[in-house]
Image: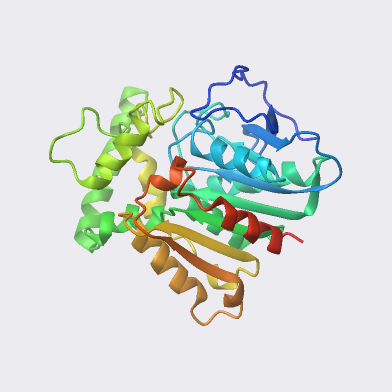
Amino acid sequence: MMKTEDLKLTREWDKTFPRSEKVEHRKVCFANHFGITLAGDLYSPKGAEGKLPALAVCGPFGACKEQSSGLYAQTMAERGFVALAFDPSFTGESGGFPRAMHSPDLDVEDFQAAVDYLSCHDLVDPERIGIIGICGWGGMALQTACIDTRVKATVTSTMYDMSRVAGNGYFDAADSEEARHQARLALNAQRTRDYQNGDYARAGGVVDPLPEDAPFFVKDYYDYYKTPRGYHPRSLNSNAGWTVNTGSSLMNMRLFTYAREIRGAVLMIHGEKAHSCYLSRDTYAAMVQDSKYAANKELMIIPGAVHTDLYDRTDIIPFDKMERFFRENLK
């Protein structure tokens, strides 16, 4: 077993969703290849025996495992899977300093580290491992599927392509050389200020108080992250947010370069009314275009659903479809 840091983990149930009596839950730790210890919640069917299919779950971007990813993991455990929801490096209960930092290569590494852990677990069949990514971590899940051949099936839910949003702005409204240059000037000036101040400025989470003229998607985020529905004290989006410079690494690269080469199955799920739906539609179209592996790729659009409906609305999240998808592709 890889050496891990001694993390201080909360032992009481502090999730944003009720505990299931059908599932065993325990806290776990595992290390990524950069030596950062990650904290996870491992959910397994109560009384499980033998080798089971397993899922690594993460997201949304800036959330913690006590929010959506934990709900997804627990629900899939109720359906017969071992499921690991984890906090990414520098966030939640996971290790890494300074806090609230981010890099997309580390996101992929964290997903791969979760697959490492599951592959060596006594309850898990290492040939039947899938991953689920929610919101910005949907993009990171797809990026992980590009490189990790152990991942046999991938679900993205209400996916964000964070590199596109960082480089082009929301709805591609800042997709110009000049707009990106101005963003680079601001980010690099912030680096200098951070070094002078000896600390990293935080960008702030979801805006609070909510302006009356806020666009709907901001209201949608507020309704989840800033209300009892989804607020959590360890969630970046619910509190001080990422560091201001989080976007710099995302601006300087693009996800999904090799998405057409993903041989494993992919199910992309998005709400019809979500402000972010264009990201899944465009990514799916690019993934299957001229691909030899398009037959096991699927885009599922949920009628009438908005972005955060797929965070926690169990009457809207298509868990039946997800279960069928994983059972068909984790054989």
